Figure (spheres, rainbow, N blue to C red):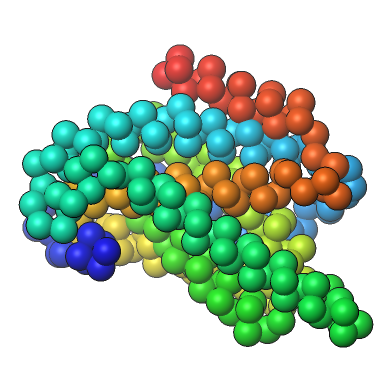
Length: 258
């Protein structure tokens, strides 16, 4: 696995749209700084805007990322060494992303229940917080990197990626605040903000094999699906199916049209 993500310095030309991608990286970072201040999202039943944002993210995975991964099988087939192992198993990385974030969610949920039984504040333990934030920092750095290096390096692809992931960050930010309360606002969101910028900087300075890009996108796809559904499915959230479906349907039409 480590061989798949080792970054090698490249002497190739500057990645496309460096100025625009830098502005979009900053915009994504600002989501984590200010999304938790959107008070209208903090309500039961769950805000329709959050459900719609979740629908957009899922549509991006199933209509854009996964079809592209299918096409990347040929690229993976031409790779050698460790990359050749996943010639026909790129979706294993999607499964891995889903399983990892599911495990993290279970860890955080169990910690919150333990704290509540001890009549503590309804947030996860501090040590669990750091594990959770570290995982999302890596996740955010990966997204920052993929702002620079995507399977499709075109301008439209960059904008679609930004919109889907920006809305996804709003959903993630809300969920992290629910789990960790004030410690997330004071420390966690700053780390996640910095992780996006670090990922973008690494992307500007380095380049990895096209097959490894496909692997990273596959992992991201699994993480997005889990992180969306864990927010939408719990009964106590009283999520709005129609808002979710509308977000997914509208973005699907945009993706198909473009």
